[in-house]
Amino acid sequence: MSMLWRRKAAKEGPDESGRGISVDDALTLMSKGAVVADVRKRREFERGHLPGSRLVDIKAIRADPVDAIWGDDPLADTSKPVIVVSSTGLRANGAAALLRQEGRDAFALAGGLAAWVQDGQVLIPGPQR
Image 1 (cartoon, helix red, strand yellow):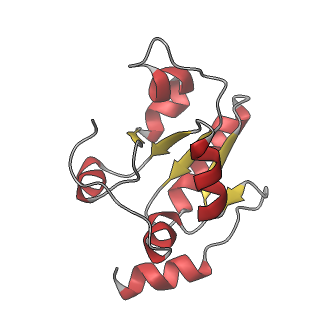
Image 2: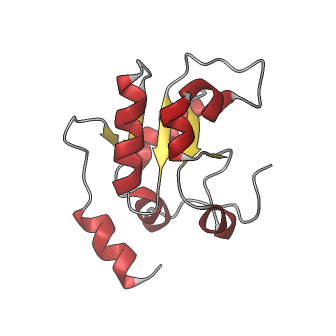
């Protein structure tokens, strides 16, 4: 992890609405079926992403949150919480706020992918599966 990522992760905390969550809290929600929406660019995602995460375009969230996150899964439980992930948590905060405006239970991973890596968690390389 680069020094820039470490510095940004150290500064990052919960978003102003209090909906930023720690890596431990994210793992707990994931174990209960939360959806992980990664709002980074495709090339960033393919370098490494959280297990089971979905690559989601922020613009698509604005247009139709359900289709953006669950569109490819007709059997998805859209009532599950959403954990939004970005490199440092900044983009994730904005996307989680958009989802909350639409009535979704959404959280941003505080510190983003940098915090995830710093905690020693696994990243999966390659395209979305």
